[in-house]
Length: 116
Length: 110
Image 1 (tube, helix red, strand yellow):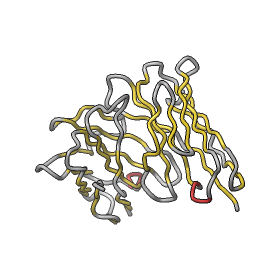
Image 2 (cartoon, rainbow over the protein chains, first blue to last red):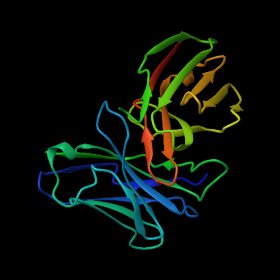
Image 3 (cartoon, helix red, strand yellow):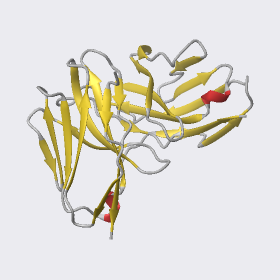
């Protein structure tokens, strides 16, 4: 069964450093997403991406964040200058085009980001 | 006001019990609805989409009430493996953005 993969599974970085989180969405999917989940809190939408551009972003997704699809398979989230409060689990998700009544998203296993 | 609200639980039920969760949403332009389950420190996994007419998948039944703006999930004959947090997810019409509830925790006991 096809699945979304993410690397690394755990990233430790110092405050102020740049990090790049990588995702390989399911190959025939067209819509890509990043979410974060701070420990003990709910899953929060960051950004959606379609046709090589951002389609929606949340208020969390400020100028410190950027996304890219550098080739036909990878989808990356970059945080330019990490802060302590960026420590969270980051999930990538992908979905096909509209199916029946909704967009069913499939999530990767996540990257745990720890900022020290 | 939160976009999606859920009772955090926990719901503690014995094996074989029937349990129901509700989720309310605030935006009447909400278009698509989903239930996901999340095990501790794992990714959300799609359980089922919620269709306007309601839908069933084995022991799981989902219903949508647009007039009252809530969706429900019914689990029959609970198994130990059903223990997880159940997440309600809503997509707004014409926006490629999804809102998650905080989740309802279910503990199924032997």
